[in-house]
Amino acid sequence: NYYYVGWTRSSGGVTDTIMGPTSFTAVFSEIEYAVSIGASNHISANMDTVSPLTGVTTISVPDANTLRVGSTEVTISFETGWTLDHWTYMDPVTGQADQFLYLGGSTTIDEGNRFVAYAKRVTYEITLGVSNAAGCSATMTVDGIPYTATPGSTVNVPVVHGTTVTLSASVGTGYVFEEWRSLQGQISTDQSTQLTIDVPYQSITAIFSAYTYSISFSASDHASVNKNSIG
Image 1 (tube, rainbow, N blue to C red):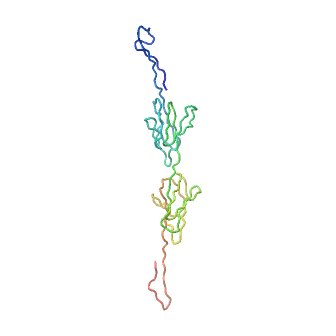
Image 2: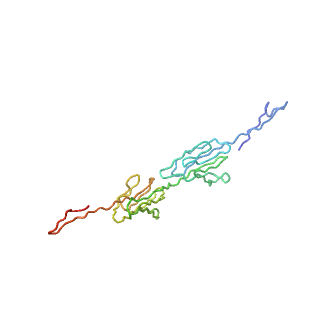
Image 3: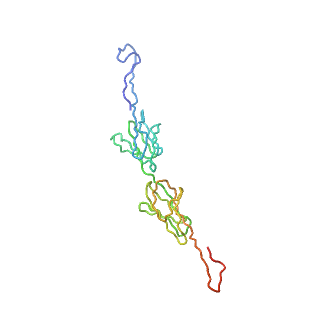
């Protein structure tokens, strides 16, 4: 990691005739190199190079938005619904970008290299639930796989950003379906509906209410009742 600069002499030039005691010193300097930054689709990054670097430099990924090159931090940002999958860098022997660096990982380099960030879609963990309605249930179908929640028992559903899911509610005796609701507000009043997951829903709940009805009374000739209806 060094290159030869030249010779120095304690007195006089290195090519002068030696007339007395003297010493010669070979001078070397550390080789400087740079790291260039790249990014795939759905990522914005500072494409400038990080330089000058010398000696052995540690490269690490402390979080999804940062590549640390020695003491320098390169910041990247993602389109909505995307996050870091990995970084690639060149193999110092083959020169191929077939080395991978993941979140929390690190490596060392001692010569120029190029690091490129690649993105993946965010996976949300959505809690599917049902209001306190005996005999009712809620189902979320994701890529053909059904996940069903019942009163008092929620289920966590992994959903990739941009996926369209199907929500369907099963109504128990004595209840009617009201709505699908999340922390963001009402989703739909349809008992069965489709929803594209393009925001980070934390929970989705099927809301039911007790069915209400009334009983009316009437009397034939020669009879009377003391209440016209109940309910």
